Image (cartoon, rainbow, N blue to C red; front, side, top):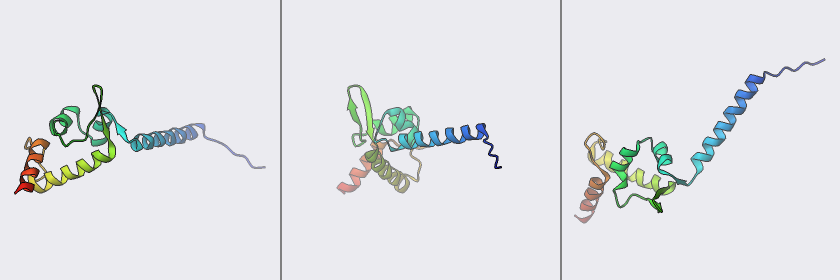
Length: 114
């Protein structure tokens, strides 16, 4: 006769892990993000996001009443460009040098005019 034993704690751990992974994927795949989602997605605090991005007219914000939403594909494109700009022109020191995106955008526009 074959005996099968099930470790209930292990089954519960595996189940919880699978559920957490699925929830993370759902959260990751969302296209519209709140400012809290954006903070988590970019790993930046709200004051840092505000200082670096929110005052830049090119930063993709969707306003719904007083709420700000962010379309993930546009954020990805903007951040890729911003990172390249900071790396290539500011030695990767955006925060340490207090360089805001407004300054980066202004420099970008000045270079394109010249």
